[in-house]
Length: 309
Image 1 (spheres, one colour):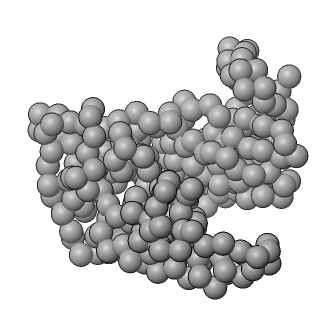
Image 2 (cartoon, helix red, strand yellow):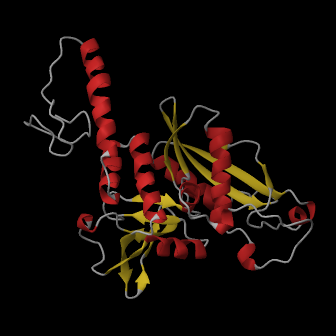
Image 3 (cartoon, helix red, strand yellow):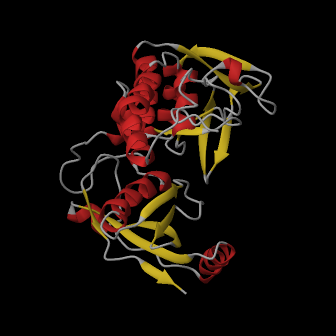
């Protein structure tokens, strides 16, 4: 038997050991009575259980157990408070360096939600420091995608856009900037990197193709080398979608990449989708010269998603 509140396995128990819900043996006369009980008892108890989490580790555990929007929101609320209050968290280190992990085609800074939750395979050496120090490192390297919490124990990614949107820490690279007209003075650090272009493109595909065509997103991978970037389902069929982004001009699919994508789709009995996109600066000179500056204005040359066969 699973607890109806937190989904913990509770065989032969009258009370859940995880959330303390004490009506596990409840019986019903009919389905209508069960539905009413869930609305009046289970759902309010679940809400209180989610918001009982005061610590980062507890909020993360509840979020992973329940996988509800409400639990995710609570996790991010606590994370935002940690950032605002300059709270200290732990992270694995290798020598005197933070551990940067490849994950789903991208690279993330590893941190822990709770030192008690460390598992076999975690680094023996850790550092405890203001969480903002990790964000400083993240924002200084545009190729890093975010933080991965508990990489060996129900890993959860907090991407840099989430940090920017949900906390007091704003990523300078995501702020709108007035570059004026024509080609301004700029350095290589001012140019968008592949990871940022892909993130931009994935938002476009999500909002203008996936959402409008009745797909359900099963997974999303924001790494440049990841395939797929989106795993989708529609009418019982699985689709694996690759987002490919160029500056000014749409990219073209190479024979080598096509063969790899099709081979991957065959393993999962999935259809293969390819979304080529060009991000074009709204400034004519910058567009003509293929320059993509952080914070600039863009329009997307995106017509449709292609099925690859």
